[in-house]
Length: 207
Image 1 (cartoon, rainbow, N blue to C red):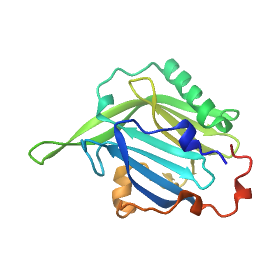
Image 2 (image 1 turned 90 degrees about the vertical axis):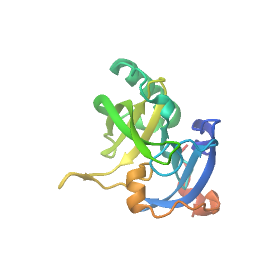
Image 3 (image 1 turned 180 degrees about the horizontal axis):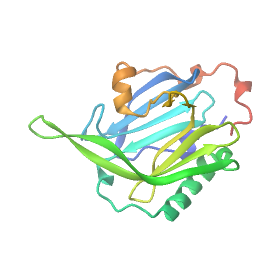
């Protein structure tokens, strides 16, 4: 089995792994891995991080690169954003492309907590261009958010949306605000990723 997370998505060299824990995504087991900067700049929930969610078969369910380095950068055009998103999907989630229907391409904001030297916290706004799309094969949503550096900074797939009363059903493990309220502590878990798999045969054909 090839691990998507190893071959296609890697954290920046400035980051180190601080936690890895089993989570549940729409009833299926997955692994949430969080990396933060080695210099501990804006560390902790709400701050800078690079996080990934990978299912038990090694398929990338999503990642987020929340970095102050991207704040204030000029965003790519909608046309360029779509090109970058499609190229990313071709390499990281090609199964989404055949029945992809784009809903919209618009700016999207993420909040980042900034720690000052005196212990106070302020908030900066990180903006990217979001390509929101639906997979017509199963009706689930996915998106790629492209940063000002021209690289994907957020990707999420297989998002289940409840039409009435209108809310997202799929857990938000990549979102620190949701994680703070629903995810419990972020202690380091050493459970091996391959121990999260049940029957290897269930994963055949996913890569």
